[in-house]
Image 1: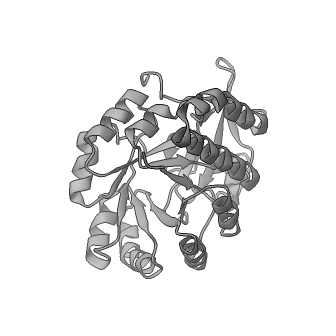
Image 2 (image 1 turned 90 degrees about the horizontal axis):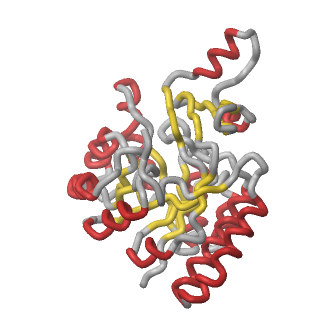
Length: 309
């Protein structure tokens, strides 16, 4: 049984060495111009540095180009993809077929990971994009464990699953909060650091707070709880899921580092001694509970329930 890739989202290049030491084997980075819901902003020089650090330790770097591109952005794609190829990035994460088409023209050997956030719900779709050139499919966050395992059994390419962190519930190209603040006569800069502000939608009926931030891609409303599957890894490890993603959006590097370390230890323990993992998995969960923000409880997302629309 092989150990899956542990894919982590650093906030800056200096994080990469810290995360490598605790078990990370791949990193997802990018910049707002091309990628959605990024933990940190990585410009071209940052990407080069990230690749240099990661490759020294035989780790991989993927760059997010998973935004939806309108006609005015299409001329930017070939140059950016050419740069990523020259920088020796290991793969591009895309959702829009425009990225795939541009990559075929300027960087035909570049590996591609298909990630549309919500529509990767079955192995037919995963295999369709695999045959179009995508090496990997990133599964939707709203499907259950049985569907994930079944998809892996029939997949022709790699499968990636998010195992920890918050997920996106809603996105609009409009800067809804920024527009409202402007209407109120208040200053809220929408670009860049506004995502770090403590903005929430409060649902008193469910006693839930939904984090919200804005960037160049619009408004993003996130889940009120964090996925945590550290004590339920058995089925996916047995199925041979290729990549486990830890999403650190709106979290500190200290938090991301500790979570990565715990998941790496839990995975190693299961692969070495599954019975020992059964004995220790509640400990791993409790250790994550200790570092959770007070307003962010843990749950298992949709892993053990049907999607409710």
